[in-house]
Length: 329
Image (cartoon, rainbow, N blue to C red; front, side, top):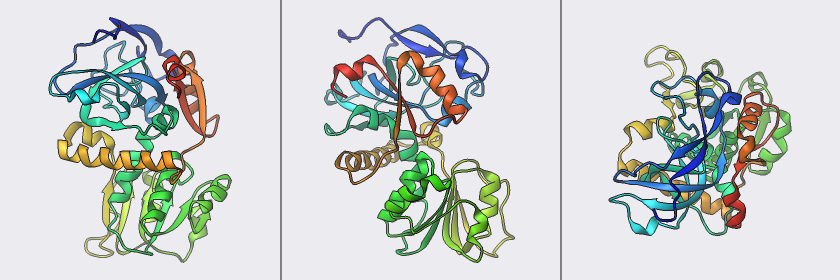
């Protein structure tokens, strides 16, 4: 801990739901519990969940630092953490109930760390955890069946971008629902069909549907699933089973990284972070394509989060700290 200051700057939630009400504050460096590390953040990744949870998480005291995604360097380790983590370049997804990534430093459990390849810059690494790991969890819900047809709803977002690539990698025939501006890119990544609205899929059925839009869309698309197929819900599950018992006999799945933070075993985390590290290697080698980036400095974090809430730009919002520049990105 000798190189770590006694306090650092972080954006603290005070009350309410408005990102612009976050306040910059000094945060005392906490003592690390067994199994924890302290990461000095180089880049913070912003996600829709970051504004959606403001004012909705029980137990947040005024001054709580939000944020789930970040990338940086491990600068301190608690008991039962291998010293090999010290100095490692890492990316992570943080528990919503713990001190988050909207700060110069973040304490978190070591099992959530993913090693970042030297060839990959911190900005791309910070853009990955929430959407990339969510996509990985979603695609793992679907049993492998080469050439089976998979429909990805909301494919134009960050999760959808990774989902299309993962589904193609597994040999699925991929259709996508998204805005027309994304069609060219998704087709270049292997999507065989892109449409703007579900109505354009009239007469088609699918082995699996992965929805990242919401419960209404997921319920609507359930009608297009083959017998014994799969419905994967990312952005809100269907409110009730879409078919009578033992009719279409589909399997319903839901995806939530928060479930791992609260109930996941060490073995489950080891599998997820290993998968995440493989995807980070693919990003480093160019075998996988990340989302385009929109960068701001640390002082502009609330404004960028508000712009994300208003959907006033396209791309992945990232907050860059001075540590990023001093370590070569």
